[in-house]
Image 1 (tube, protein in one colour):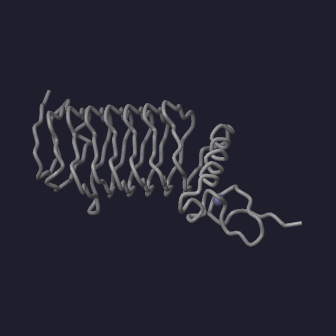
Image 2: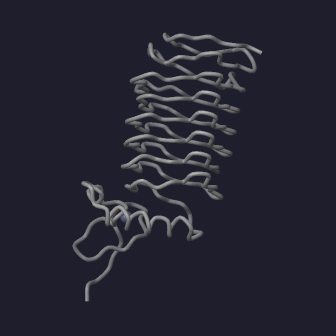
Image 3: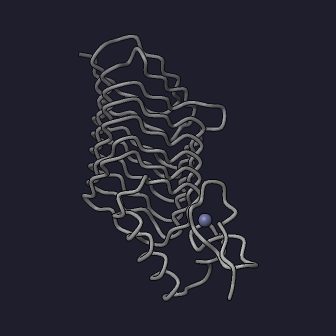
Length: 223
Ligand SMILES: [Zn+2]
């Protein structure tokens, strides 16, 4: 009989067979290539974990296309260093604490209409295609420190607390839109972006004291 031991990824609670280093969630090669059965296997096992009532620690996971549309996360969610190999579909989802630091989003990332009711971290995350956050609400602080964007849409987003778009490595490779975006706490709002295709249009600041460095088009409404 084969002996069973734990996956070598720090914090993983998955068993693996002897001679295997990583479980199907932490093996970066498991989903490589178009393998319908493996995608289905990972998706099914992941959904079981998601509804198991256990802490949502999915750091370092490699996931196929899974929809979290309108999903309500009732406990903190940890996707730090995770890789979404076929897009991330979180539209309309509700989060408590959400950790996406150093995550990689291959294909589209949809966070439109989401509600982040606790701290959200996207620091050092990489978006390889469009990141759509339009109409999302961030109630507590949110961090985009050194985040790598391609196309990003923050139109009509409400930032109700601290926000950081900063870091020497933060990159907007293509058009990034802040249209009718609301910044309620500009005192704690930090935007240090020098990138010509990042545009703040009809942005609404609830108070003054801006800390903005931006080369792109900028039209601001103060109220
Ligand atoms: Zn593992």
